[in-house]
Structures are given as C-alpha cells and as structure tokens.
Image 1 (cartoon, rainbow, N blue to C red):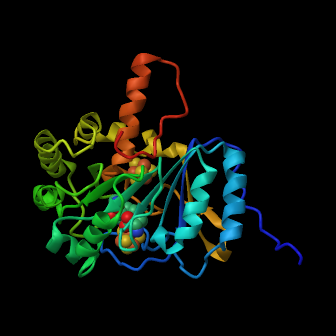
Image 2 (image 1 turned 60 degrees about the horizontal axis):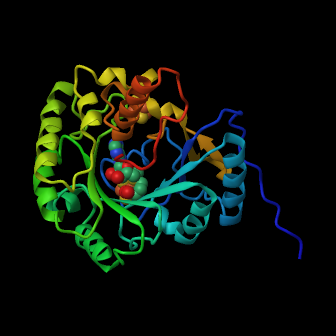
Amino acid sequence: MRAKFLSEPTDFGDRCYSAALVLVTNACNLRCEHCFVYRDKTPNEPRDKMDDATMLHQLRILRDRHQIKSMLFMGGEPMVRRDLVLEAMNLFDESAIVTNGTYGIPSMPGHLVTVSLDGPEAVNDALRGAGVFQRVKQSIFERDPGDGTTVMLQMTLTRRNAPFAREFVEAVADWPVDGIAFTFYVPRRGDESEFVWQDLRERDAVIEEIIALKKAFPQIKTNLGALNLMRSDVAWRSTGEHCAMNGMLPLYVGEGGQFERTFCCYGNDVDCNLCGAYAVFNGAYHRAKRMEACPQPRSDDLTIRGTE
Ligand SMILES: C[S@@+](CC[C@H](N)C(=O)[O-])C[C@H]1O[C@@H](n2cnc3c(N)ncnc32)[C@H](O)[C@@H]1O
Ligand code: SF4
Ligand code: SF4
C-alpha cells in the first residue's frame, strides 16, 4: 500500500519558540458565552480539521524547526481528539492540556491537565451549560488521583462571575485535585459585553479578593507576584509589546486545514490594554525575577505549567 502523502506545515519563519499552543480542533461540545475561540476574525471553522497523521507529522516538524520544548493542547475541546492528544504529548519535553472536563480527565503522568470551571454550580452552568458542573465533578472524582497527572481546576474570572470566586473555592476545596487557579478575561477590541471591566481599576477589587482567598485556601496556586503585576497602575508594563506570550507560537487550524498563527494565543481580535491572561503576568513576574538574578536577556521566559 502506498504511504499517504502528508502535507508540510505552514512556514512561520525560523524563530525559536520554547513554548507553543495548538488548537487540535475547532470543534467543541459546549458554547461558553465568554469564549474567545468563537469570535469573528479568528480561525475557528470546525470542518477544517487536520487528520491525526498530518497533525503529528506537522507538529514534529514544527517542534524541530522552532525548538519547541513545551506544548499546550487545547481547542475547541481537545478531548474530542483524545487519542491524538495522548500521542502528540509524547513529542514534547513538557505537555499540558486545557479541557472542559466533560469527556473525563485524561491520564497524563508527569504532565498537567487544567480543567475549566467558571464558578459554583449555578454560575458555571449558566455560562458553560446545564449539568456541566456535575459532569466535571464526576470526572474529577472518577479519576485515579495517584496516576502521576497534575490536575488543576481553573476559573476564568469575568465581571459577571467574579463575585462568586469565594463560593467557587468553597465548593471545590475538598476535591481531589492538585490546586485551584484563576485567570482573568481577555476581551476583544470594542468589547461591550457584561464580561469586561472597561476600567482596570474596577478589576483591582477582584485581585484583592483572590489574594485574600489565597491566604485562606492554600489550594489556590495562583502566584502572588503575578497578581500584583495585574493591578491597574502597573498592568500596562506586562501587556501589548511587553507581553511574555509573544514568545509563544499559537497554532490555530485555519483555511484548508493548515496551521495559522494568530496575533496572540487568544486569537486575532484582542484588547491588550484590558488583557487579564494570567500567563502574561506570570511570565512577566518570572522574567523580572530572572533579570534580578542575571541581567542578561533570556528567551525562555514562558512556562505552560500555568501557576508556577
Ligand atoms: C478556550 S478554552 C479551550 C479548552 C477547553 N475547551 C476548556 O474550556 O477548557 C481554554 C480556556 O480559555 C478560557 N477562556 C475562554 N474565553 C476566554 C476569554 N475571553 N478570556 C480569557 N479566558 C478565556 C476558558 O474558560 C478555558 O479555561
Ligand atoms: S468549552 Fe472551552 S472551547 Fe468550548 S466554548 Fe467553552 S471555553 Fe470555548
Ligand atoms: S491580548 Fe494577547 S498579546 Fe495582548 S497582552 Fe494579552 S495575551 Fe498578550
């Protein structure tokens, strides 16, 4: 039988990226209201899937070309392509997956699985869909907690669900996971939805609340240094042209089933001035720490292990 012809990846130049992110699928079984994936101007057509053999082939080439060490698998819902993810994660020194948790929690010993929940049951289900909280809870309790996988719960804080952060932590505090993480909403330009803080000074109160919660609940792994960099008076120093995520290669599946690089991990249409991506501020925090220790610039500021 003749071997199948596998197409070559898009040419993204020869820059090195220590970390990358891949949307293994644009398909998702949920339609969360705040989701950046399903915005206009971002490649998100579900029918443009790249088959497993081609994706593995292209990821291998991109890994070698750009010296990618860490890969974050997401989508859409990456567990729609569970077998592909479990095979592809072995291509990289460090792999992580972000999942909505409704297809079960994959066993990935030595790697990180981040499970999204956006509030206590009623709040989460209003955003993510009826019954989702209980399905995720069941997935978490059914997994083998001793399988060597690091499992974190992550709440994306928006202006709408932020008042329920404490209730969320209380609801999940005794779940068998390795920790709880928070990230904040990344709006599109001109975003007038109920999710966005139009003035970052309003977001400061939420940062204070998370810092207070962190003192009461050691399960919260969100780094204090990164939270401090999110405050309205200094946030601009870590975003836009200073964004640590500029060192990460975002791979979306675009027209014709080929990889496309978007403006940032959060797609093409984003407002950097109001960005709340935790990884941005955590990257800035670690960059500053390294500069203190060694004032020579380094390219490996990024970690895909969200909370460290
Ligand atoms: C896009 S989802 C993809 C993986 C998976 N479907 C899930 O929900 O975890 C990855 C994470 O991005 C978060 N997210 C979605 N839209 C966002 C936005 N506009 N700003 C910040 N985070 C967002 C989700 O809540 C989720 O935790
Ligand atoms: S489950 Fe994830 S990809 Fe799907 S709509 Fe929700 S945030 Fe977006
Ligand atoms: S919106 Fe994107 S590019 Fe802009 S600061 Fe946030 S992560 Fe960085």
